[in-house]
Length: 490
Length: 75
Image (cartoon, rainbow over all chains, first blue to last red; front, side, top):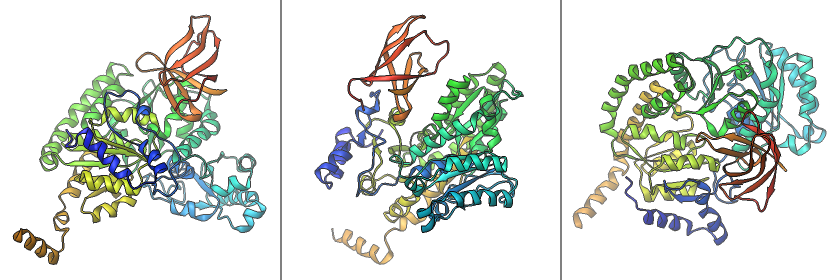
């Protein structure tokens, strides 16, 4: 149970909002809530997916980030052209650690940056010719690529370049698919719309390309959807599914290929990990191809066991039996990890502020270690995410949507968690305040965190962060004496 | 008019999904629910009301349809 009551949490929200002007206060109040598990619909108490207020420091991304950085970027055998000025592509290059197998620059291109490097003259005269030339050059220099996606940056939409026409023409010239993605950064309120746009382009340009081709599928085919292989996550998930007797046909999109995506409509079940960024395509496949989808959670043994059993429920008894065997095989390893780390981590409080699926999915993993999540929030969630979160979080805990830098700092100061899980922009602020922070967007350069193997690493990382002796030395020695003297005098 | 998708919920009822606004809600009542005539006014649990032209009950869900909103937009 949390140490704060409902009244205290409400008072905290009111106190933090006090600094805002009247109008901003009214708006921000809608995005903060005290959790109440009895609520069925989150929209009654929290507003989400709205434009951020000008002036507050939001940590959201843009539609381009959602499309190029999240959905399309990790597809390793395609070349993703950042069409527009050079910065967007360069500063989003390889930052997400979507691991893949292959020889970069020969048959895989995940960590490379391809851009049309727009200059003033391209804005004035249009960039169509440049894009055509770029496509030809790419084909000449990297003949083993399997296709190209053109990720528009803001100016493309502003000057109205017809990238669809170029893509169609170019695809005929080089004989490979070219997918124009209209993910200009100004679209939508956050990266969330970029995910949606990217999903729609996959639906329109990729998914139906192998319809009607001979089917070599088995009754045990599944696809991992919405796992971006951050630090090897998808691999840690995949081995569990394979041990269960399932055949993983496609990984979307971490370590994924274009061919895998085209083969996905032939699977029997779509396993959806990141609901926020890929539910669109699974909904489409459910309607068009009759493939059911299931949300699963591979963080922490409790949730893994629950998910494995639910996945096995879609298949025959042989898979169900093997699922039990998998659970039994890893149980001793999990018991050992929990026996080792739980005494060290028991009762520690965590606050999370990330995006996608993590603010609710990781809660189970922390609870397995005896830790407690006292506050959580999403950068770009919609109300269906909060519907799911309310059930996962304890009563009277704090939930925040699109929190600003100020709000987050104040919450942390008042709630005093033992640890914060957020991004790099928050990391050093909180560490200077003396609170360990794990960067939960890309597992702080560690990982994987999914699956049984991932939990072992997760537990170790949390222990390393919390037990680091540096947190006991936050007061420098010359100030320490003064503190002690004051204490003595008093 | 907006494109919507109706699917069977895990709990057995129907859910309503409006891709344009990423709005998901469960359908609390449907006006016509017979094999020949299915559709009409859909009342959602979030207070919204939408109208779809009645059709024969689809053999398989989910299904994408055109719907008209009746009344004010809900949140």
